Image 1 (cartoon, rainbow, N blue to C red):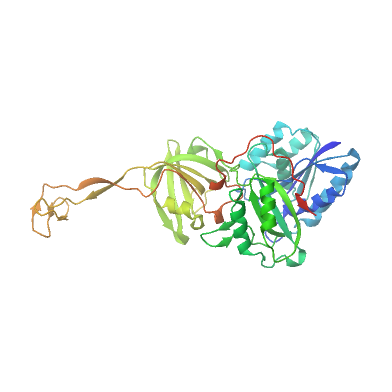
Image 2 (cartoon, rainbow, N blue to C red):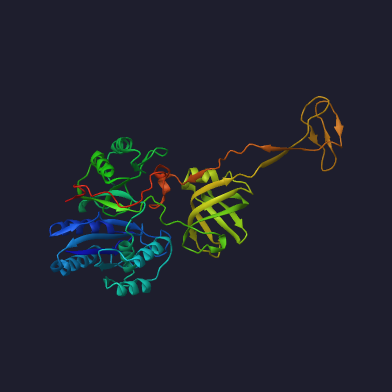
Length: 443
């Protein structure tokens, strides 16, 4: 038996398609052959800030064992499905598929995958690695999908990972409003918590498991174990037919994209970063209720932005004061003619609060009432009893801060695929994944 890793990416567009759907189609076809899956299909979200991504920037890898005689048939099957289900007419969709025949993933490919998740990699580097490890690749148009395909192969999810069950719509329902019972999502959320996450926005009373675009996904439910997302799937009540469903193992909700850097000077456009600094400009609100402030360290300064939909994070940001010590998490937006380079915040940890100093007019020594200023350097007078003095001074006091030294995260409705929610802290995984459950896909 030969171990075969099949990676593919960049098949969808904002107007149609989904790379996970191609994986689901291939699962059905491969199960009809004499092959065995050695892992759930891997859904690997790459750097969410790359400018040429289509939607969620998710790449797929199928890991199987098969007879050597089946390799050519399987490769032709994969290429055919990628070609048939990609939006090849869309400018910016550049599919690619990669086939690797190794029992163990080489360390160089693991490093490449991490670079693709946390930064920018070039196609030339992917091609070089494909040749080095005698893999095979097929690209359409510019073939940029080869990068994601190889990265999906390289990311073996040996550390922290989660699971997602994705249910797909029948062809006739695509492009129409999704129909699932919201009450069943609330029921599912209560039944499976804390082993599933980001199912329902209780603040806005909104279902979060359904996407909004014309893609074939009906819903996706994320959780800590395959059993948990399968139970969640069984609980949700759909008012339209489900064509198929598959459980994926993924890096969703792991913060895999964020890389901690030592200084602000190291920040690069399009890279997701974690960096510390001292707040050096007071947060100010710009049109559409976005909040901007800047932080600095010994190497420089950078703007940070908390957008209106980020909820609790934005509410925390507006309470910052100059001098607060913070750690910020987010993707870096490049500079433009109108804006400097900016970190779009996903999270913020308040490390140390600066004291909030306020000055009050002194109290009248005769009647105890708060006095009024008579003007700069002219002293104070009491409006009640008429007492005046040039010798009294304003009283310096430390005011209460309505902000805590803790972690703040964007609201669930605005979290990216990779953002780790509060519910997952303390549930991070290490080591080999659990054994596959029996019923992990249909058909």
